[in-house]
Length: 182
Image (cartoon, rainbow, N blue to C red):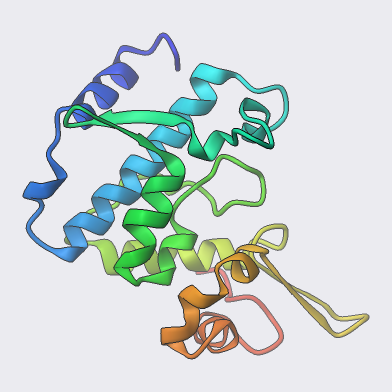
């Protein structure tokens, strides 16, 4: 990808955008999810970590806080996009859409998020993530234990407006089993 001209064009296009001009909340959420995902991929492409994106940072200088890309002449870090822009928008489904380039992260959507299709796109990727036994929700029938992604622990307060993590998960999963494949 480092040598792919379309990748450079995508990043140049992102840099030339003005997110202030976005008309509504759906457009802003879709835009920032797409930017986060593109920047996370670019960090990996440029850094070429041995095993994990975390290898590109350190304890005192984590990769999430390092410059990831530019927009309208301003440099952004992944942490800034996630914690200062996306999370304050109040839709916890973003946690099923932003991809931190780690195995435990939600799967990368095959197409960019759009303002017009955002509701369905967030729903579809969230359900795909939750169905994945190694990423989202998994029931261990032998011990009757439900395992969920650590994202629900790390960002527990993001789900409060939906009644908490349990209520949120109950809305998107069946009792005792992940959402069935479509």
